[in-house]
Amino acid sequence: MKAYTILIVILIYSVISAQTFFEDSLNVETNSEKENPENLEVNGYIRGVFFAGKVPNKKEAEMKTGYGEISLKFKVEKEHFGGAFSELRSSGGYKSDNSFTNIDLREAYSYVYAGPVDFKIGKQIVVWGRADGINPTNNITPYSLFDFTTEDDDRRSGNFIVNSTINLEPLKIDAIWIPFYTASEYNIDGFEFEKKYPDFNLKNSGFALKFDLTFPSFDGSVSYFNGYGTTPGIDATQDSSGLNLNLKPSRVHVFGIDFSATPDGAIGLRGEAAFSLPYENYKENLYVYNPFIKYIVGADKEFGDFNLIVQYIGTYVFDYEENSIKNPCYEVENFNRLFFYQTDKTTYSISIRGELKLLYETLKMEVFTMYNFTTTELLLIPKVSYDITDAFTVSAGGRVFIGKEESLYNKIDSSLNGIFVQLKTSY
Image 1 (cartoon, rainbow, N blue to C red):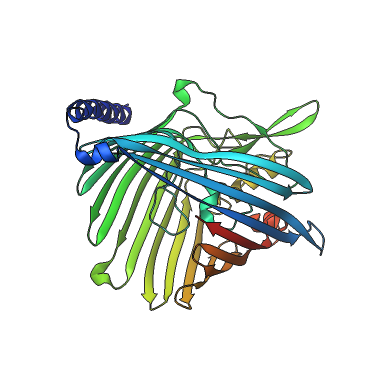
Image 2: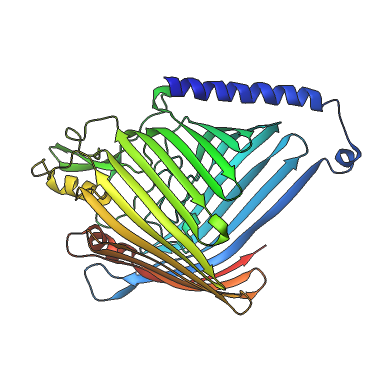
């Protein structure tokens, strides 16, 4: 209840401050405002993407997806008041032997600022965490692992959020209310799920708080999230028709901390950790994972045109025990443990990202790799991009999951492994 009280106080303070500021501002109008009362920015991109991969359970190749996509971004700035931002994406093509057309309003929100207070409302993407690629403190908006995409940012999607920020340099306080639940999308060959998501009852809303400190050579924050996790687990119910698989999220507490530092401008240091504690008892519910801590420590360094990021990733599962639920639900419990990396009490991984820029930074070669020492799973994502002209880029790369039999990567490799080619024009 104390966290809810802090959240409500910050939101009320934001609204009152904005109202007072607007009343004062209405009496002041400069010449620049008369000449240019608003600034409108329009940009985006058009791209074509082709993915090819492996036919499940066969030594053959197939087209995974091919599509064209346009993105339109609009940003309006109202001087002294705030503004608005939106991004609309529309795509069409073929996937899994079917044609598709998709229109996605990725973000659309308005914001106001009044002195030290920013207030934002609408569909937003919120990203927390300072580690590279893996962020255990990032629990506000969905992140879909199973999409065929050439850019990591494409995996993020928005949710309706009320977001208030108080800037008290070097301290910044974020208070977020999440009234509606939105889940990350699952797309796993061979599985059909019924979605059992929370309804729009007020008690199912979530909230989050973050206290962020920013200094010239050090940034850090502590955070708290209370809501349903954007990655649901798999539950199972049985009736006369057989075993039914349901996607069902757990409500959780997540306590987080992160930092990044650049001592003497030499080697950058970064770290992130989160303790995740579900409300419900994991022993009584298939879809609920064990409480756990996930932590990351890393370093990054530039060597001329080459940049290197190395991270150590660890997970510790509390109250760990072997699978306790018998058939026919054993396979469901086992998959949940695989998916949430809870097949072992502790797991240890390393991630490496290398990026090389050549030809006056028109040619960029990068590779991200992660190896799990505990489960002996390997992820490899290479990518090469070349700027043919300004804002006109061709890219090629791939994604490879390798794991031993019965591992998560082995189960998803035929669905997600593939190579791609992309041609993208920005404007």
